[in-house]
Image (tube, rainbow, N blue to C red; front, side, top):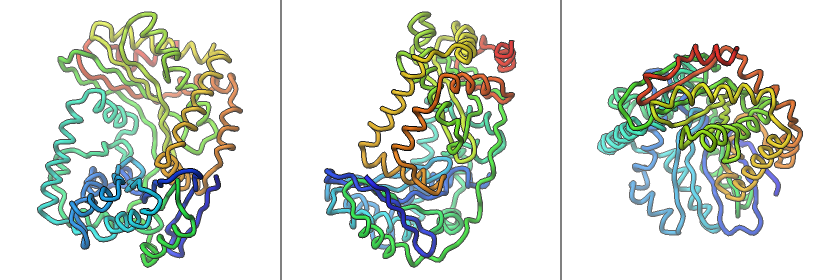
Length: 421
């Protein structure tokens, strides 16, 4: 499978990968306009705009948008992240032109009907309320805010309710005008697609757009650190810890991911075995690495009782500290195999492959081959993983978020001292 990249004269990019044997395709537009591209008074508008994309265009009503894709058995959806907003569809091979037409329509011709804005405002406020009522969801927003205090990348994607309540039609249209230029857009497709036909479709739908720079570029991220403690009489105490990690382009990203998998990526991981299986301190515990274009985080999460929270927090940092010294070759080999298998299995889905194409092209300006990526994973040594762990734990920046009966939890400063001891 070969990746093809083409750039239109106005800067609009097309990236495509044919997957032989498939009868369907995934395609969409990824826009370099997410939460970190918002001003403080715009927090939540990128997500609001994503919702409004399906609420009607100059050519189609909201129902007609849904019917156009579902009449041919496909599906259409969207999501907002801190760095991108995506509008994508999955259809059969012969329906790729239709999907392209619908996606272009919702991006280029939204009407932003005032009645529909009010309806969707209510939906988003319900979504915010649901997140606030879901402890193992909202705790990651609080953790992000502590990791990147006072920065766009640290703000919640949904935005605060008071901001969502204030957005107007002009606000939505203005964000599109400021951030949705052709140079910020990538058409990515994978599966049963014809690369030449895809470029023709892109030219027909987006080639007329004038090139323009975004009005609000993302400011460089600075990992800070701090503690958010929300004491509430819940059944469980929720504990989340974050350390600064490498950005998506850094060489150490592979060592970071392998370290996170070995620490908390599965049932054989250290944290799962030590804290759940051997000590019974929790039901859920995991570690993961998240990366952005210029920064990254390693995150740990666990849920436990208020009485056991202190022991769990202390043993978590003890286990991490010990792993930086004695992570075994067997653990690294297992984590490396999990990482490669997870990546390759996931990329058997054309939707995941299209997302990978867009993400890599946006950040790197190219799409490394899977062979190159697996070689870089295989090149990570046990020493690399240990060194990464020691370096990460030795940095000053650490963030923590607690929610529930957390009165007995140690402070972040206490945990930092324990790591340094």
